[in-house]
Length: 204
Image (cartoon, rainbow, N blue to C red; front, side, top):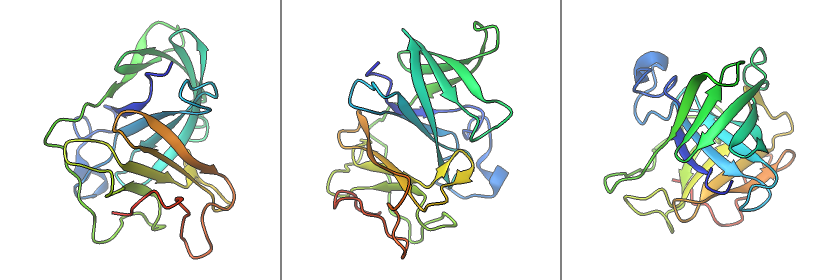
């Protein structure tokens, strides 16, 4: 299911359904952003990662796998232990979460398209409390009106910070196809808080 990867929005956490001031976080508001990234190659033979942000600052990681044509399981236990494994259905542009009956849709993440007005700018000070988790861009690739060059760094699986100091880095070079750039549970984060991006990511 190679067309799964991309940027989505969760209406339960997005500015449309949840005001940006709910966490007293100023713009830009990243709450509700979700990125689906294949693992194990372009075809996603190793399943996929779901990268998301609820509080407008910190990004978390969850994992999912394909169980049938168009059907998916995503493990929410690290984020919401009481929820656990959720059954999903994918159709082009939308990932729907199913109720226990396997038919009723409880929530849908919708894919975001980039128009010519999309633009990001570097922050004077990064907002994450640990000074690494967040969204970045590679200035050598990024261009206005495109997602190309975006990078997301997460140091937490669900709501739990990885104790070993490792991080996961996902990104897109062409603005469409996303890939796992680093998935190191132990040692990707240096003692001084630095991360080895392989010389590819420019910190905005």
